[in-house]
Length: 147
Image (cartoon, rainbow, N blue to C red; front, side, top):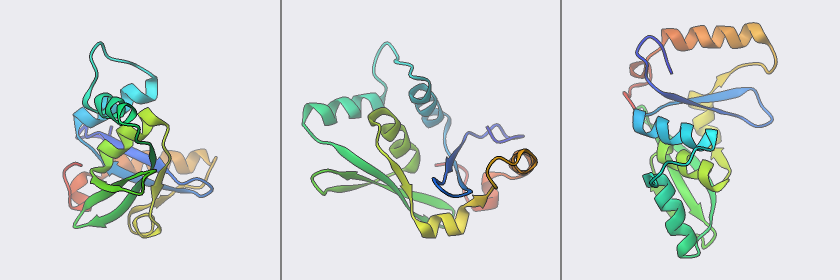
């Protein structure tokens, strides 16, 4: 949660690098992502659980999620299937689905260059500075209210 507005935020960490990509999301998507991260299964399937079940039922494999663009403060993503089909998606939905299917998430170099925040790995003071930074910024600083 980004303070003081209590706006949910996803932080994607660059593998093999020191950049993080902050994406503000809505509370519903935050709940869906948190459930997947914690391995919680609701009594009835949430939308992302249903989509995963439909993909399995029709034999489609989600092979990757791409965070492809940042335009006017809005992030864009694509779902990439084994068949080669690509479908536009909101990053928050794509991330929630990727967590349920074990699918890798990739951020384009352009998006990471534009919106990535460098935090040197294993330097506690830098991580604390980042937390302080998050306490001071809002989605409006990036030209968006939520994803």
